[in-house]
Image (cartoon, rainbow, N blue to C red):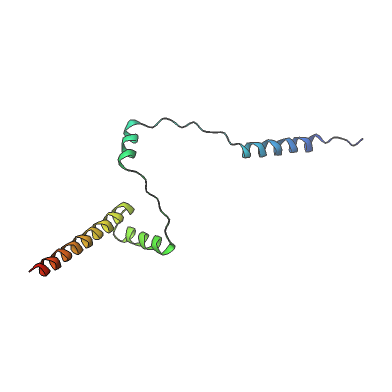
Length: 101
């Protein structure tokens, strides 16, 4: 009959407990959100998207160069699109008026 090694048994128990703990980490209880935080999140939704490395680099460059947030960069882009759209609408309207005259 082989002799039992108490140290080896303890090591195996520790390893088994460690594996079990890593497999099932304890859940932390989240504290409830403050009402002001809930209101802020409702009026400021999160927007996520995937971008290429080139786009990410260009966004970061403008973020640092002009000290802008990603939201401000998006707003500038939207404003440019809206101006371009307005110009196109005006061009169409002018060309229609020329055809009528």
